Image (cartoon, rainbow, N blue to C red; front, side, top):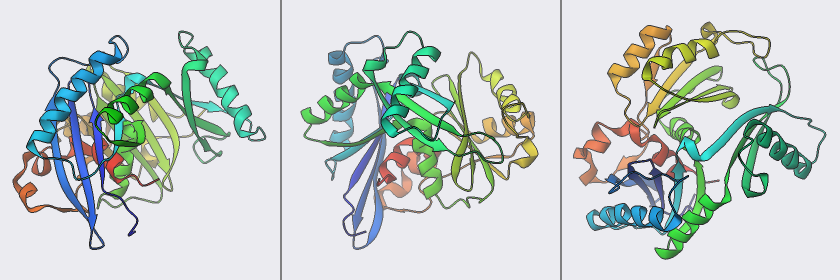
Amino acid sequence: MASFENHAGFTITGSKLQIVEINFRNGQFYLNNIDEAYFTEQINFEKEKETKIIALLQGAYDELLVRKPLKSNLVSFSLPFDIFHVVQLPYDNTLLHQDLLEEFKWELTVVYPYISSKDLVIQYIEIPKNDIITSNTALVVATNRKYLQLLNNFCSRNRLRLKFVDNVHFSSERALAASSTTIVDGIMLSIHISQGFLSFIITQYGKPVLFKVMQLQSASEIPEFIKNELTPSASKNINKNMIEAAFISGEFITEAIAKTINEQTGINFSLYNPFKNIIPEAELSTNKFYTEKFNSFSPAAGIAYRMA
């Protein structure tokens, strides 16, 4: 653990930049900073030029630095749902890695005919057949390489080293695993709600087995979506009685929202504190982000905790 480098995790939403900085000293992790700064206007990754996006990021980043300078130059980013294409696809486990990538690129252009495969950066997680999905599938995550280049340019401009880039829900999952919440060995459900998107992950024995994401027109769609995804079908063997623990995170999630979803779905979703297992610096003990809004910082915390 002595080789761990101090690490700052950022979450970019449409309206703000959030930071969680983790320092390591004397064999112990410390929460050094938790903060957020709003952009002067909404960021639209798809429509805005790189120069404008970097200018908006720079303004929020500078505001954060004025309040508290970084102790680390190693940074990672959690990015919003709308710049990712995520699908769960069947795959042939006899194919070599490069052949699988080419197959997934083709599949993505079928699902999303408006994207060009040559512009995509792809990662995938192999999911062997299991109690819920009875065939081999892969969770395929793709984004346009221009977004990674944009972040790299921003980091170069600020003398930062870019380490990881991930989706907000996958980052939140890491924060959940690092929290003091007891993680069951059986079937667990987590949902993340942010910027008009709902993401849904079922894990078994700590490994993802089922993933879905949908764009919400209204919050009223949330309970029905969850109930539909927990209904058995020809492609999945799942029902709500199989869920041993359920967790919720997101940008504006409150206990009241979680309670309403619980009542509508019959599933007991819990908010979790991603900072439960880490020692805060003394000045953070009264910080409202640490004491009250901790759940909304799950993606920034999760990407800051990430080591590999």
